[in-house]
Image 1 (cartoon, rainbow, N blue to C red):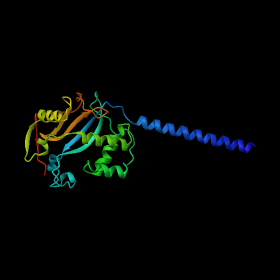
Image 2: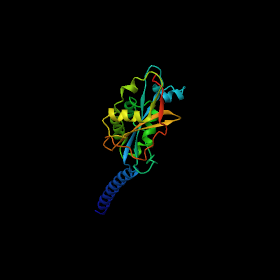
Image 3: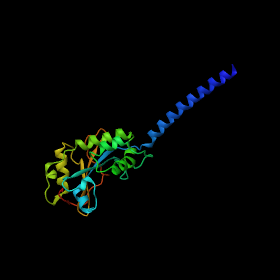
Length: 219
């Protein structure tokens, strides 16, 4: 009788310990994500990138693909701190099924894994949920025909590009920002709330310091 009582007590103890462990693990995962205020959707201008990286053999730089804006990432960001949260918890590799699907939007597998480790882990979402958000945000952006059909290098006003995108997407003024380097367009960035609706970018979001940017045409 005593032996049976001991076994019952042991089973109950193991069950309680397992339940506590699961609760603690779940709590730890939630605590791993940083608090953030909005998302920054970043779209790189591929022709300028490819012109400065002539040995890049990724699909975005392949002649004949006519690649213009390329998905870079969806970044949890802060209204008050220009140093946005990064690498908020250890990142397991993204499942191969998710990677294969997201290659429809990202230029390569390495960038997918990088974006999850650096930014996705700060979203409070699973990798599947995070990349679903990324896909929704990217597919919702309407690129004006002016940029799709660019056939020669152009110098374009930063303000004109931002306003073109705001109007084309029925977005509030100041919802789009450009990043640039040495007068070259690097990326277009859209500010989105946590429900992926456009919002005005806060003062902490970076802005191109040039009044104009150069856009090389897609190949």
